[in-house]
Amino acid sequence: MTVNPYLSFEGRCEEAIEFYKRAVGAEVMMLSRFKDMPAGACPEGKTPPGTENKIMHASLQIGDSIVMASDGHCTGHTNFGGISLSLATANDAQAQKAFSALSNGGQVTMPLGKTFFSSSFGMLKDRFGITWMVLVQA
Picture 1: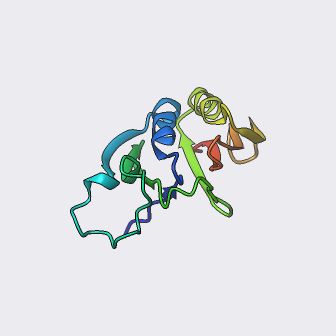
Picture 2: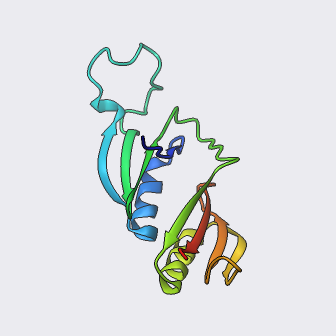
């Protein structure tokens, strides 16, 4: 079995994908827009008008992990409470680079620093409201 996070950016998915491509080297493995659905695949009225070019589903590879994403219902309001993504890096320089990139436009909640369990560990909330824990894997 595999568990993968599935993030709903409620209208900002394309912006998020571009951000994660720059910040952590995310690679788009698959991307479908609402307009790509076959006729009749979605009940009438379930896709809001004007969302045809929004992302119905995307699959991103970040290192060895897959993160899936969507624009969801395109409400413009995300809610990522109670969940964090943990990014394990190989060394302090890689942790610093990822932490700096992910925190750009976001909020650092615990500065990156040495802890009893890692040479570098820090927490942040990125510009989309996703909480990240960045660490050097011991």
